[in-house]
Length: 69
Image 1 (cartoon, helix red, strand yellow):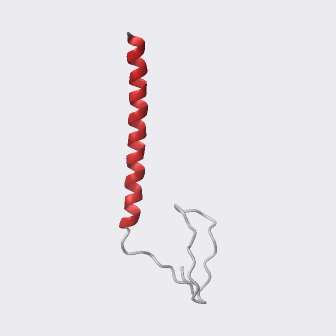
Image 2 (cartoon, helix red, strand yellow; image 1 turned 120 degrees about the vertical axis):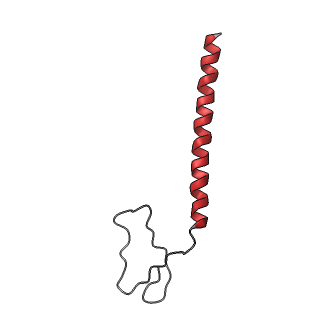
Image 3 (cartoon, one colour; image 1 turned 90 degrees about the horizontal axis):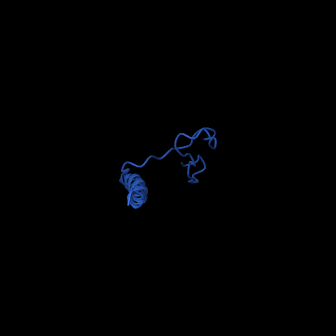
């Protein structure tokens, strides 16, 4: 966000967070045209979630297999 005095500051809003900092009149909100750097983080988050679920499932199967013997 670019303030009317020319100072550049981050907006500080996250995921539709209500009650963020007030935006003064005359400010310019800058939105990046290429969101690809942010898509990488989403992919990494999804990948780690799947890997975590796989590890929990494999641990549960190992316990079940041990009890079956």
